[in-house]
Length: 121
Length: 112
Image (cartoon, chains in turn brown, yellow):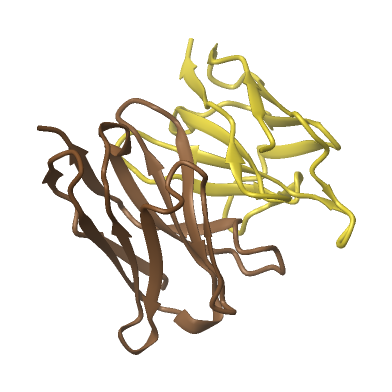
């Protein structure tokens, strides 16, 4: 059974940094693209970043240059390093696994429960 | 970016009746490499993460009841629930995955 457990969310001041983690199990972690998708309180879904199964990183324009996605295959864990945080980054951050049907890695077949990031002074 | 626009924003349907949600993309999401529409539908219940229910515009995910169906091509797509059940109350999102992924704003489905 695929399981994705996100952690690391916290209250942080504007301009601060935070690292999110997503522990994955139940599948061959290295074989699938993994992504972060966020949802601001009471709002819709916004794609943030994807790490492909061939080690490429992709970012939404809203986070490019501030966020870094990477993975630790030995630990089956996906990370999101978030720097220069802004109030508009406040959201629940979900990690998601690619459905794995030959797309570019952005069809989200499984989702974790999410972790809340609040950026406020 | 490909903009996704859903309608209506909210919808109230009686139990057992049909519910129809529409999604329009600002550009075609028909992938030339696979000749399929890169359009997915997700269901999100309160306090839960989204769940994939339809992909390739019309392929039901494993385990999804057959009262859910997807249709459309190019820029215009529809999610239909043929006979609404109480457990279908949720917010539904469309998403294109042809390019940098984008979501519709969501449609809140309630019981009338």
